[in-house]
Length: 434
Image (cartoon, rainbow, N blue to C red; front, side, top):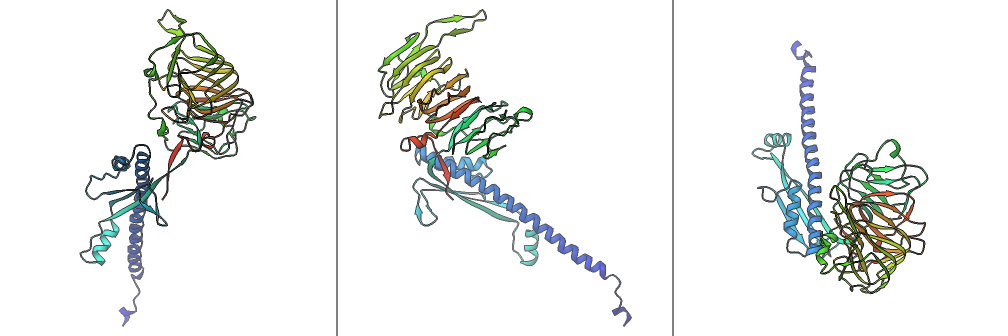
């Protein structure tokens, strides 16, 4: 019959079915995209929780591992106290290949995520089946501490040019990384073309400045707008007020010759009694001068600052022979040292720390490592201070720098402290195993 052959309206029918299929595909794509996004977030939460648990286990034992992991997962949006969320913490798990990892912490996370298209289709196709939400899970294992490859931490959180490599500034530190904590868009500034550093990587929380700061630091990765890193956990126990270790204070202007020292891990405290007070009531004291001296093992606290000159040796690289120079107030200056031998302790509170200036002391460091025969074996821990960093063309055998700001002008040679002290180094970090 004629109406059987009538093709009017067929395009409308095809369009109707095609639109249905397209809308279905769109709905499925939206649901799948949302679930993949949730999966990435869950993996980040699992990684953070495993790292927090493994760090707690490494430094403080297993007692509070689960608590630390729960707190990290909650901070990333997965609260184990919320119904439907799952946070499982396993201490010393067996990892891939059947290997038991005693230092590891495993975290399994799961949380329900709502769906739209999948829920509707499940009710239509599978009667009384409800897929209104789907559990998204993630797994992470952290532990197995290894040597930290970061040799410089520039800690000021906000200032521009907090790491400034100027002119012929050149950091020669193969295999070492640099972390810049400032969130400023111009946190990294490289000016001039003469110096090209040799580094493993520079990670910058903020950005690299424009204008004259657009210089090329060298042929290595420079990662901008990275995540925030905290100070290494091994420094959490160092006193914010080191003068609490001083039972007595010796007033002296100059230290020279051989000083036996207080003994390994014990305190000897000095101050220069020559002080002046300005009309505005600001008191300034002359720093103690350490001139061509040899100081034995111990913790040397300088309450009015210290200036190091001539050929000076602080500590030894023998067992229990290390020493730490501590500036509790005032400035540190080794800019005129001709040769400088400095050996940090290899155990105790100041393990690996050659120079310590508390966060509260923001006076600038003048730090020079001396001639080619000098050895500087330890960390400079001065997270609130700016430092002018250069040497006289010699090699600095080992160091870690933790300073507020750094101005690099001239060639500086650094080698990772851990490579010289592999069995005693405190500069370890937790890694993701799975």
